[in-house]
Structures are given as structure tokens and as C-alpha cells.
Length: 137
Image (cartoon, rainbow, N blue to C red; front, side):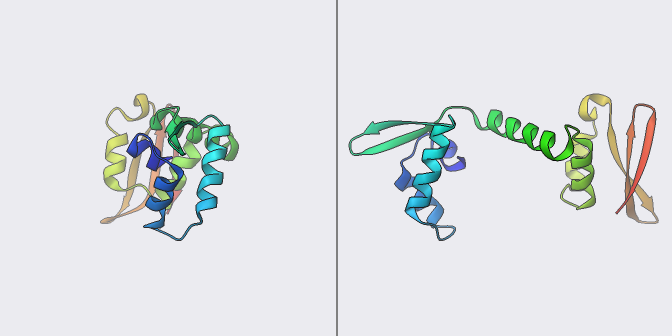
């Protein structure tokens, strides 16, 4: 999908060649995946000469938003807080990522702040409306 979004439209061959630059993959695998994405409504295809040209049916941001929502629903029972805490504890969110979240953070209801022990963070505190929870790294 990323390749199709980036290029605007692509053939199976175009996606295959782009992926092949990064890793070994079979042409038939790419073709199968693009057919599945078309069946699920993420791609539409039109015939041009002897090849099908695929285009995304939805904007990237809309698809990612839906995928994240579905993931949070299935894995975290609809609550994004455990996901955010996992990302912080796993150090997948940098201090600058957290700075982006903090100002007015998440509608102003939640702020994630480092809990310092000397000169390095020892955990992260979640301050929400009327509650404080501390999590060890």
C-alpha cells in the first residue's frame, strides 16, 4: 500500500520491482497480496494496455487510523493507554515524541511525564483527570 500511495498508481510489476530492491520476494506473492487488497476494497484496478494499474481507494491517513483503531480494540480492549505506556516503556517513543504529545496533550486530559531519579528517568507517570499511576521502566 505504501508504494501505491507514494506513486499514486502502480502495476504489480512496479510494486514487485520496488519491493525487490529491499528484500527477496516472489512476483506471485505481490500479485496475490494486491488482489486481496483489491477484494477488500483498499485498491481498485483498471486495465491499461496488457496490465492492470492499481490505485488506492482511501487516503493513507484514513486507512492507518482504521487499522490502529482495530488493533487497539482487539489487543487492548479499546483503550489506547496501555499501548502508549508500552511504547514508552519499550523506549519506542523518544523524548521529542513525548514533547509533541504533551503541549495540550491528547486534548489536555492526559500528560505523560518522565519520573527522574537523579539525572535519568526511572519511570513514566501518567497524570490524568483525578488519577496518578507510576510505571517502572
